[in-house]
Image (spheres, rainbow, N blue to C red):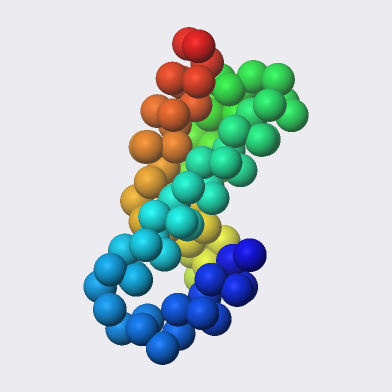
Length: 92
């Protein structure tokens, strides 16, 4: 589905609305993946702690390979939002 949406948007990919829409889709996809991972771990708190530990380890190393791997974790500056959503989900 993601590939289809990206290919169909190519003719108008330059438009700011299309860019914003793709950013929102990527954020939503991250949130869904987080929810699925937390459900598999049976603990939102444990998963959130794993994300924090992973991000701290990546920030300490700072090698080129680690930066490439960290891009997925720090992409769009949404780590804080991801952690907040996990904690809100825990309270429900």
